[in-house]
Image (cartoon, rainbow, N blue to C red; front, side):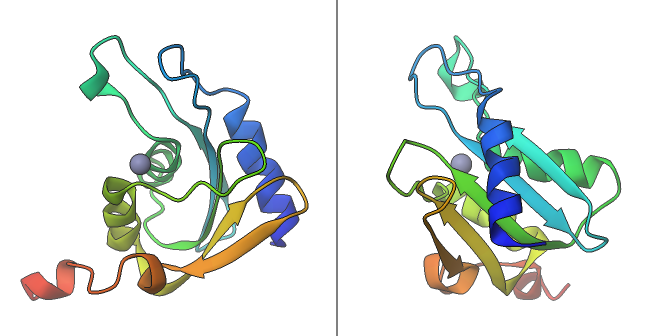
Length: 132
Ligand SMILES: [Zn+2]
């Protein structure tokens, strides 16, 4: 899976974002261990706390279909800038991915940067800390 293909999937996800309150549209696409891809968008709610991020939407879709190992995730948000995952999403990524997972942050369909989870969530608390 090349980065640009995954970014295109993330943009597809963003096109379905439900963000009538913030008007901040985010899309994500995850590649799982079997190369299956799941897209996600942010889904807001009038009760703001019930809002779900694009990254978690994509990951929860994958997990609910039996896939629990993420190989890579692409995230696109505001036009022409990089949108990093929030703290909660970083923690959820840590549950289902290795520390060296590729996190592709897209500025647009051609410009992107690649980070690892360890770079954006150093010292993550994971199942290893629980002896699992
Ligand atoms: Zn988030």
